[in-house]
Image (cartoon, rainbow, N blue to C red; front, top):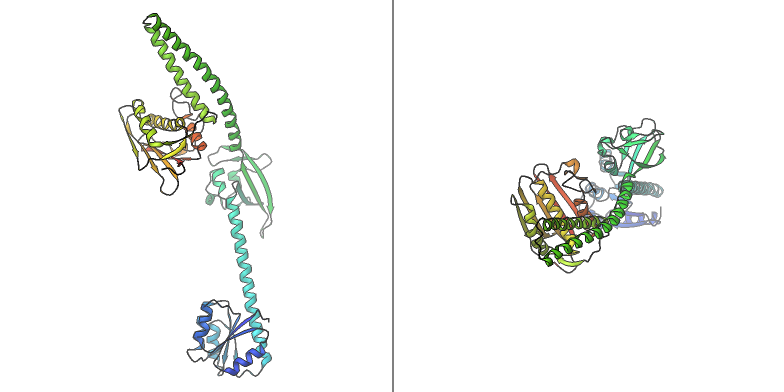
Length: 466
């Protein structure tokens, strides 16, 4: 017992107060005459280890006070004081959570000190156990948070049976298996774990991984913890970086050649005009050369935008103004069978972007939408300010063929296309995503086969504008 121990005494006899304070001189004893006063102390936030409560109080029954105190402080140890002990009253008090009872008058001071001391020890041990349990729970929560936050897949399985005991959320991304379907099943579902390790996704494709392993002792049998990194993404990133460097070099050289060809065609055309010659078919051939050069230069712009090496001149631009000008020209390419609408909600909406980048984003999405609606349909382009964030949202929706769910994850990959070889390079959507990433934005896509596709581009709004 120490001064850090607190005892609540609820009794209307002054002599009892004097005796308890004298006997428990190394504890902090707080006295109350009425039961309601004791209850108010606990409601006010005071903490006690033990309460000594007279069974008969001036304002209410001590048994009722015990019930209320235990509800307010479940870890409080209670001893009942009674001048008329009975087996039934003792049972009632114990049933309400009383630890013990003492008979008045309190003649045996050693017995009083012993019983209160035991109650204090019990209360403090219970509090320490509760604190330890909470610390364990907190530790488990922190472990779980860390476990779930790891970007690599983590699998915990039994050494002997290979049964999976646990897995983190990243397993679903890496392997394609829902976590709930893995728990309790064999780790061999994820591939062979022998000397010649071969991991596979749920769809059967081979997965290149880097694995770190640790052992975990458990009560039943040893467990193995595997931290698995999907290195195929790293290899893909390295491959794309190499493609980007190659594309940049080729695009620059190709653009220079096209400029020479285009300029030469213009000089020949001017020479024919100077001589007063009609040229006939020759002028048509020159026009086709010029058009081919312009198409080639547009392709180099896409390659350079994709590689991130195109010289840019960012400016604060109203997205709606660019759309109105651009779509009026694109309508001829879209065709009469496609109904195209442009809506600017509110605004103007300003973003910091190179105008050619914004034009590329819109042109690529519009051309994709046109190709998805070979029999005609509706194309809707909207610009609005995001409700809950400082972003401008550009939405392009079509009523076309839609994209199957299993292909949605591939549409932004460079050179991936579902179009015939003579109609698509596979750079359109890859270019759009590359530009959006460079601008610090994001692109989301929703699609339902036979019902259409919606692309949503979110770009940071220009500071202080829109």
